[in-house]
Length: 113
Image (tube, rainbow, N blue to C red; front, side, top):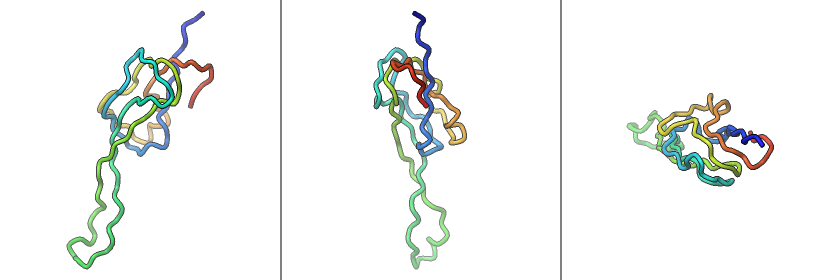
């Protein structure tokens, strides 16, 4: 029997792009299940506009931003094969649908998108 071919997994389109990879949480050879945390990321969140005030010094100010954090979880069961991204990588939304950041040896026999 031939050894299984790793399946490349896409990042979900629903992540708040652009994201910055802050940590990789699994290593090659680790058994992963659906829901296993794979990596942590950060992103810039634009805060809602503040209500208009009578203070002229606050009028016309740019929206405030804050750094927020998220975690990407494994969508399938399998054995983690390899990372195709690194800690510190920035992932823009343009690349998200084309990028396969991880390869996992799947227990299932169908493809996952």
